[in-house]
Length: 486
Image (cartoon, rainbow, N blue to C red):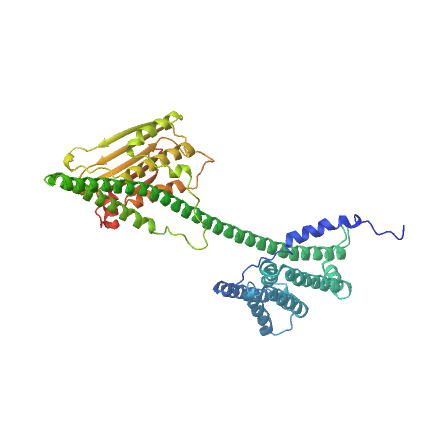
């Protein structure tokens, strides 16, 4: 049996403790806490100096320093250097820890009464805590702080074992005439209490410093995750805008193709009329007028929509391309004439939807009626479709009202779609907000405005107003200000 190797299970009782220590102090962690030196550190040094000087003089007045033979300027030098040490606790944490330990050792040997002052004890405690909390490398922190604490306990043991610490304790106990009434002797009790106080002192500084470091690391990771989520959200919104613009561009293609087809038919009819019956000039003039009207309408719509589609809609280098169009995207959406059928379809799915159309209000001139352009008509249908889908997915509403208002007043004519419900947000169904991005995008493409949000009396409202009369060279800012009455 002597030649057999030692079983691997034998040291298993020690490994978990070491593993727990490594995990708590994150000795394998590469993250570094960024330390700096700013005005706050100078304020800490000045405040510490003020309280240390005040404590020194009060202690002198109370007679605690009457046995000291060192000059007062040396005592003040100790207070000043201890305060200065704390200034660099975040920028040079391990250096500050070593300097504080050396300061504590030298002052403890030469002037123990000064070293025992509360303010200096706080200075030493803060220096050790800062070394653990702000050290760049966890391994260097463990070596430096572990070495300092080992040195301090070695110094304490040396004072009791080889120095005059025990003799001083016995002299103090003899002076106070203390009787042995406890479990152990007064000398042993004093030694044990001193050791326990030092364990709590240094152990508390180390644990508090490590907790501060772990909190800072967690906050840094949360900040990184928040930035990542913000970037991903921005990318999703950009993709949603690009996708929405692609769908609008396909609808624009259909509309322009329709107008161009009409132009072709009317042009052919005019040519045949002029060739066969030159006396029918009026008919040819009518056909050419229809060509002019269709061409103006097509060019005006295409100029406004394509100009807006170019804005921020181009593919950015390094960004993922938009998703390919689906069959639903390729299918042309109906216009406002399809809103009643849409309301009936949604109502059949269990949600009560009422639809109404208000047109030509009192005082409007029917002769000045402006037809709803096809692109605007399709956009209003898409907006209603998205609003109703959001109600089904994210609301507890049981009733929805869809109102289409068409106001014919010449240059101020507009089409307004309003979708309201009586529900509240459904828990656990918060969406990405991309649907609302699409609604706002369609409103912006037609130089209109969108108002989305909860109503004061309860429920939610989606209201979009789009101008119907838009000159070829219309200024988007002028139209947006004109529509701001929403």
